Image (cartoon, rainbow, N blue to C red; front, side, top):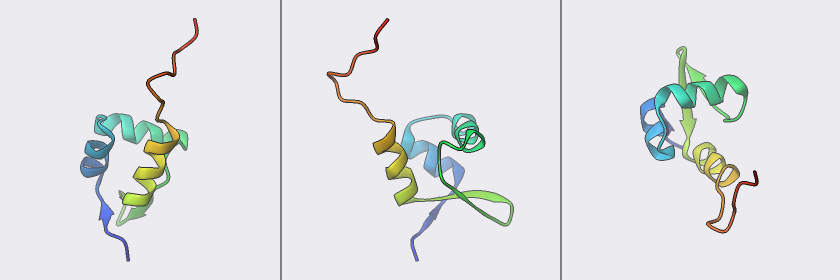
Length: 63
């Protein structure tokens, strides 16, 4: 079984605040599970989030 990460650890891996990660969970942008009422994440779920929301340096926002 894969190790489950808490909210603090997962947010640290993503480089975001815990409140941001909670918002992403609420919006359905990040997969998660609940254990004893607490949000938990697998490393695979966090890596998938990083892959989904990563952009190359050449990617530029268009005005």
